Image 1 (cartoon, rainbow, N blue to C red):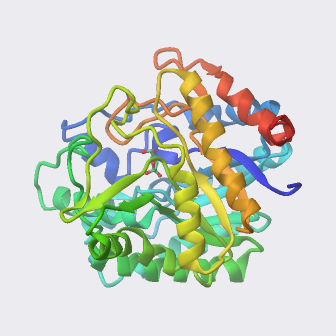
Image 2 (cartoon, rainbow, N blue to C red):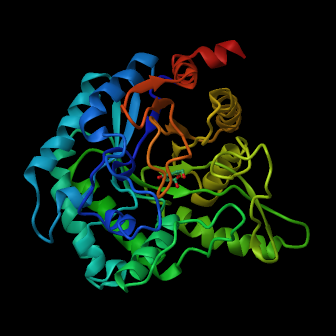
Length: 392
Ligand code: BGC
């Protein structure tokens, strides 16, 4: 697979630090969750992190541009931030890493939320103007993800609406035992419109392949609940996958798998083998997610834009990667068009209100910010160089 993307991913708010003009910074300042603060200082340390990825044998790095930095006040664009992100792209290219650039990874400028967020009739226009501006630095970028996990984004957007209404907002998940509400279909439809608009702008102004990345939950039916399963799966992910039918690719993001019963998605039962996010250890979720995405999009090329595990035992991460990639290779053998695998995450980072779940191929000491590449990084790098398939 000569052009296959083998890499790792990060997102601006989780990685960079001091994203002070964003809605999440505002949310964290309420005191109901841990704060991102300096995050892992990716804003200043990206070159070192990219070098570690490249030295290990990877050839791609996915990161996001931060709208709240680029347009901190409505209509005011920060040239220095565009230059900063262009430098990131250049650094990746100089190290032999293909940049995979996400335009919106959960966070918005605070002003956008104060003006009604995605329910403002002008929301898509606001987003489109930002996208037009950033295409100025994306001319030679080959892969652009417009919106990250629009299905989960509808839930975080709801949190921001409550924040703007002056309510006290609890952390994103009330634990693995909670049943998340279904994605908000009204916001989902607006995001679909925003995605199509952004995709067309990117296609017109750059040579990038454009797509969005969907949180694929690898849902499975329980006996007697097949209809409910199809309905829940549609609302959770198939609606979002369907929007990718005309796209250049679709990003598949999968971590774990859950059954669906008459009441919806069944929470993960407590188990000593659950990961640090409380999710079941299910590397096979990747294969389930890939197959569903291929089926629903009817063959839109797939890039696995996220897949990973929160653990403090790197041996489990290695096992997870090996097993997840086994399901990816099986899908490729069955003729599914897969163009890349980007592990979540490049480094440990801020897990949306929590610091304990560590997802990184590279560990980060939160006091010194020192980086320690983990054996899982070498493992993925060896696979990227072609060792895995030779070894099996
Ligand atoms: C998101 C990431 C997040 C990861 C693990 C995805 O929902 O895109 O930002 O850190 O999953 O929870």
